[in-house]
Length: 140
Image (cartoon, rainbow, N blue to C red; front, side, top):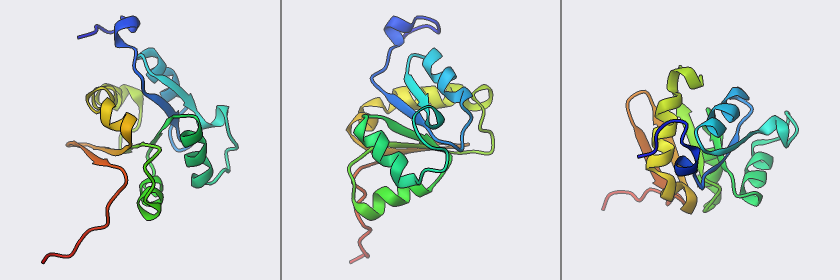
């Protein structure tokens, strides 16, 4: 396992686009952990719609990192296969508070995120749903 600070062995294929509802500090933190990351304010308009942000992420092979549930809803409604979304559903939203957990689940689920998935991290667990989201079927 790579040690903290050993970037060459910890380098990830995951490229993250940090949503407006998370601090730009996240981009710096994630880069320091071996990920490619950029905050939306560095590439887009602060008032852009969620669809614009999703389109940018898809066009630039980035995964959306957010605290917003709307991205998952958009992907589910459209049946899209990407981009992947990592949504944090905790009260604590700082890298100091949950950064280690975020990095752990990003590394643990990297393959699914590269293929297309929604990863939800809450205070107890992480759940992954592979894209496209299939509508629920009523019980037979």
